[in-house]
Length: 136
Image 1: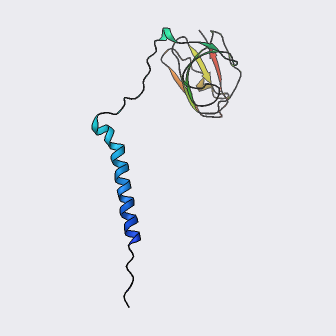
Image 2: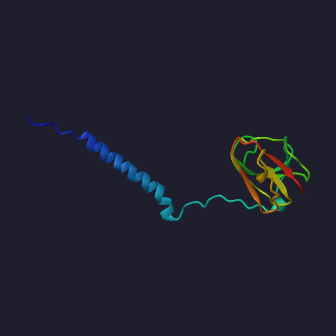
Image 3: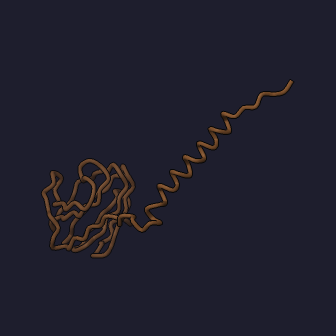
C-alpha cells in the first residue's frame, strides 16, 4: 500500500514563507526607496521653556512624557534654600544640575551629601528614600 501524499503542509509552508517575504519587502521597501520619513525632532532654547507650578514645590518645564503619571523628561526649578522632605520616586531617574548648587542625598549615607555644582548629576533607584537641598 502506498502512503498518501500530503500537500497541505507544504502549501502552508510556501504560503507562510511568501507572506514573510512580502512583509519583509514592505518593511524594507521605504528605506530602499528613500521615502522613509525622518524621525521627529524638537529644538527648544532655554529661553523658550514654559514653566508651570507643581503641587510638590518646584516649577516644572516638561520635555516629554507626563510628570504626574509616568515616564517623563522634565526640567525642575527649585528656589534657592528649598529643602524637600524625605520622599521616594516610583521609577529610577537621573538628575542633572543646570544652574545653582544642590545636594541630593540618601539618609544614613553621608557620602551622598556632596555639593553638586552645575554640570553635576546624580541617580536614584526606584523606591529609595531621598531628599534634596537647593543651596543657591
